[in-house]
Image (cartoon, rainbow, N blue to C red):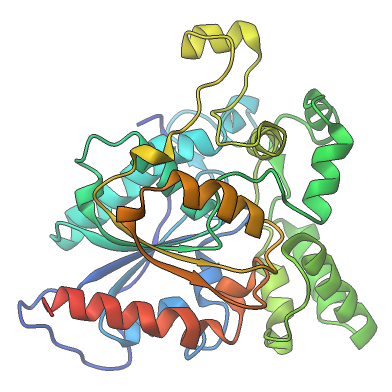
Length: 356
């Protein structure tokens, strides 16, 4: 609705020829997290990747890409070289991108609803959109699988916590250092570094691992080490500096506020001095399956227990799955994820679709 052209990827068929009673495949839509892309769902081996596992189980798999990442770099009027192209945060992703992609999937497939699996920011945008929904969008989401769910990020740890506290409330410093454009793009320099460092000697590969662990949480010994160069080649996949600033604002706010433009602009955009907060208590009409862990430094345990679980209506929480020893990236790349998350989710969706 605001001119961005989003690229989605589809896996319409799997290895097995699965037939469904009504002749229509159930649809699963997967949404990546912060600084990630659709590739996150298919970067492991077929028997380890959520995208491939759902496809092999007979699902029509759609992988979304939010504005500003590797695959969604187009706009009907603006070019990425224009500063205005990057004038957004996850507010716009929740308001425009999510709705546009889901509606397109339903139009193409002829289905009335999808099964939604989100990771990290992919949960934040869904929670935020549902919190403002009048019921028309919630009915399009049959089940919402929230991996490493994000509400408040007041208690995040690691590298991002350092950045948030270092800059404190002087968020303009981010724009001074990184510019008001693209943040951590997936360009040739990043790909070269991934190849030479992450795919190099063991000491270099260990350095690559440790950088990721500084962001996501401690090593959990459940990564396929041969795939680390693949992970690092695709991620980070880029976003806007403004989006990162919004995340840093959330750390200091302690809740889930809209982007803070400053008092003057806030009054113009919101009609008040401070940005409004997304009200997760208003979420209705969608069954939510939570998957979180003590070892996740972005989706911190305290933020889950003290904020998310107290702001979501217990009636919408179908399952609350507390998984041991999962860092933030293990939910998409971890070798235990198929048994702990993907296969159970496939079984739930299959039974639901068949009416059992």
